[in-house]
Picture (tube, rainbow, N blue to C red):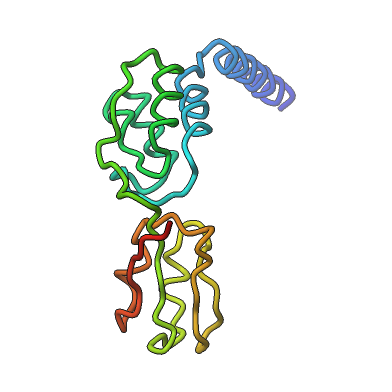
Length: 162
């Protein structure tokens, strides 16, 4: 019985040492680079780039399966920072933002307080309680349009503000 326990303990020790060595020796540079790219993105999680959030877009950029100019909220400054970090060419934004800043506006007279828009907002720019009128904090809104589709009464529109 002691022989079996000793054998299993030695196997576990060798396996643990092998895993420790493998963990230390395997390079984690791609994930580090993904994190560096993710930090440069605006973290609006707006999906305007075609990815569900900033981290998946960062991973696609590092894998070279996405261009660095797909983030309208980040603008040209983000493209320049990404190009500098990755050693790529600076490209113009693929979907330039319209002149002025676009924000969502809720027609409060028609709002039924369903909270669907609030749940869809990636930056928590919509406030309001269940069965109560909602409103948009314009300073926080990125104009991503994600709140428009879930609204059952179509009381949300986009407006350009100066």
